[in-house]
Amino acid sequence: MGKGRLEAFSDGVIAIIITIMVLEMKVPHGGDLSALSSLLPVFLTYVLSFINVGIYWNNHHHMLHAAHRVTGGVLWMNIHLLFWLSLFPFATAWMGENHFSTWPVAVYGMVSLMAGIAYYILAQCLVHVHGKDSTLAKALGKDWKGLASVIIYAAGIALTFLHTWFGLASYIIVACIWLIPDRRIEKKITS
Image 1 (cartoon, rainbow, N blue to C red):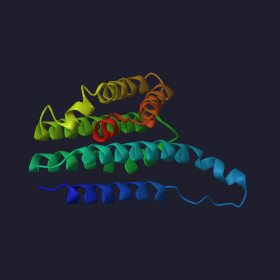
Image 2: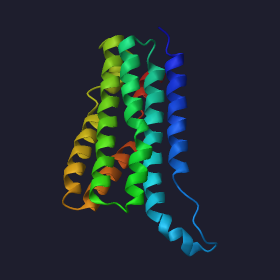
Image 3: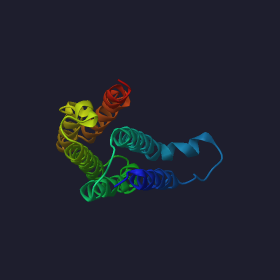
Image 4: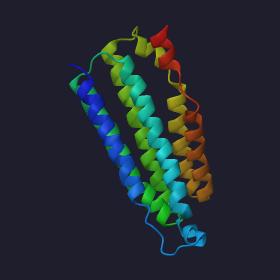
């Protein structure tokens, strides 16, 4: 089966997720810059989530570009990923509104962890469909970056209970790892 509808649906869901996140930032009462200070935690959380969702969209796009077909299993694994991504607006709002309290930061980490696991499962499902000698399989390789992300998220959740900034630092580290463009798929497609 073709992949066009999967790509279009995923792009639409991700666009809605980003839109919902920005709608959670309420306009402050007051016309001076000091009125914005109360929004700082919400804004910083939004920036982190926007970057994370953008990273997923970018990598999802590249991964599907390397894929030639999808199966029912791939469709369900994609829905699984979109489910976890759809929880980012809630986790983002809760963490920002509560100024990085322990449980909201831990829940944000859990949503991030589960999205990372879901993406990894989707990638492995696509590799299974296309075969171990496919361009996609060769591009992903052992996917150390994806596995490291999952481990860092899990550690970040645990570290949150020592101090919330340890958890946040872990989540930011994962975002920084992925902000460096992952060119594995691009290189394999163009070569």
